[in-house]
Length: 254
Image 1: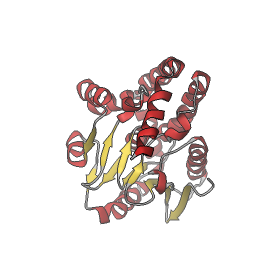
Image 2 (image 1 turned 90 degrees about the horizontal axis):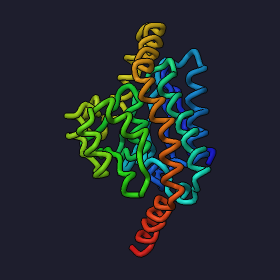
Image 3 (image 1 turned 90 degrees about the vertical axis):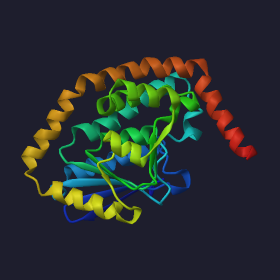
């Protein structure tokens, strides 16, 4: 697992890569811990002024939670799980340095949420984004909070309850994608944007990001607190575990 997160320094930019391409860069607890550490390291380095987050390969930025891990959860583990997400999401919200998501493919579930927690998102026309967790029996609470901040209630209800993935053009029209470019330009464009933001006055950048976190804090706190109640209830019924096991069984048959 040590190489499931890769880091590279490019001038004043730290590029962090989710590196499980055979799993569509889905993350488990260990991988999230490594991502936390990489974000902390970038935050502590005075020579780093911006971050690019991307996924390895050309199929996915990230597929979200690794279902092979979460299908083993019970209600107690689901409660701890919410604390892990809070710790990760706070690093995106409370850091002083801007973060650009370079979307090289699928961004689903919690990876979709992380992309929306980044300041800007660069993608190509083949990218798909969405919140398909309902299809695995997992209720979303952090997902519909961050979607509502970006999209409003009507579109949030649509994406939450249908679990549909949206094409890049639709996501761009919604404002979820900041720059839509050809696939071979995603990394260069993300790096260019990161360099642009790295050159901005750092105190103003820190205070602007701080203020954005402040105006969304109440919704974030509500989502995280409600998430404990919702996930404990869901996993206590056994429905998510059964749905995920059915998914793996169907995949084995294929």
